[in-house]
Length: 202
Image 1 (cartoon, rainbow, N blue to C red):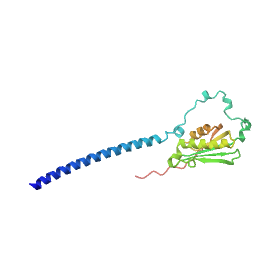
Image 2: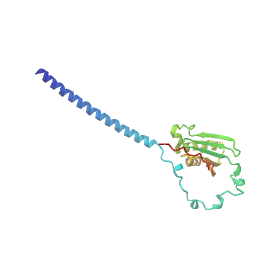
Image 3: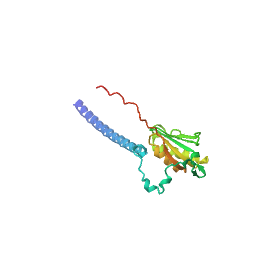
Image 4: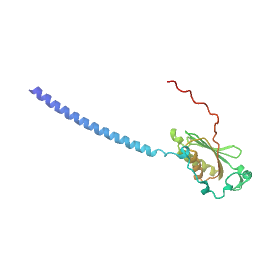
């Protein structure tokens, strides 16, 4: 009798403790899941928005923006045309090298001698952040400010490569206060690319 009574009381205590433990465990798991969802939401908020650089640059209505179309395209006299007292061919050049992983900006004089160089990695962006449009814009603003300190006001821009930082770097140079006279795209196009891999045998 005593033994049965003891077993019954032990069983009820065990079941009560077990149920209490399961309830606590489910509450803690639900709290952990809520925290994980909130952390993920915060992470998504901190990520940059999809860039329009390579997925399709915004189309510009040239006719609406330009009244004097004949002044836009280069002519024979363009190299000698003056911009704030400096001939076009003697203007300093900003080279923007863009890839999917990084954006490198360098300022050279008209002969090609380097004066300033800056990349997203040097600016403090790490890993995948280096390839974002925000990193390219921040780098362009900082190097543009340094160029203005050196007395450079009007520049030509040459862009090379494909990646998220193409348009953002140019926007950053404009935001820093530089006047961009011309934008040249020097992206190499291979007309004889390497052949694709051999098809896998199944």
